[in-house]
Length: 349
Image (tube, rainbow, N blue to C red; front, side, top):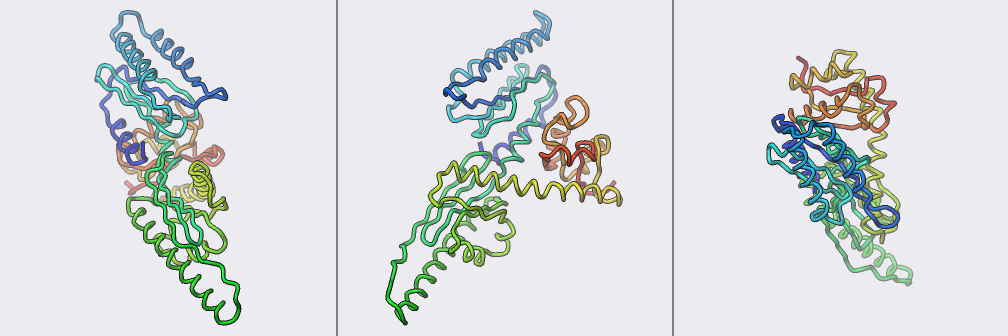
């Protein structure tokens, strides 16, 4: 599931009409050290506990029993082996059953019954794994990956003839050097042209892997609008696997977020004190969401750092309902002075 389809699903879930009982299930479906799935025990116990919380022969218990059976059938027959994280949203009364299988794990297993889906963890995955491109380049080869929600959404590979070594000196050596430099330049320009086409599909972040010969040339040739998307240049073996490139790219993205989060929170505090387009704290943020003022909801990455039972999920859902973006701050200490939640506003009421 790509970031784009994940965002569409989040919008759909956030806009559903309330209906009971609505069950949300998050599972880390990774295997353990022996290659076995360990989520089955959690599922059986969690769903049994859910049923016990409702009176026997009640309508809600009957609906949840149907949902439990459907979930167990899905896990036994339909879950893909490559799935590492499953978010599942189900309401028997609405005949609704929405599984979202991801190639990245959720941090914790969770089951919840309410009148709405709980979208907090799914929205956090969207923020953690945005669409981004990684360019792995040397003087004659290149691989371009577009990663999206933990998957490789697009891939392109280019290989140009390798310049031959030439040991003669004098003018012949100089002529050969110019020829090699021209070949490198043409190669870099071809890669950038292809990258530009791929970035037109809404990729806002770029990471580069390359050597000391080609990276300066690559950065020099990058158009300004593409250079603005450059997150980092990272050192990695040019022959690194796709999985290693993905991991290194995500680490670069997280370093960027860590560096930017402190500045973001400081700006929100400053704007709020100056009467600008920012609000801090639960009540002010909730009011701004209700009035459709919020452009970006900024919230602690762990819901326990947001005051109020289930408040974090409600805030994220309200943001999605009003087309506001959501940014999660991983360091809880940064969000502590603002009460765990803040918002940048579209306008001041």
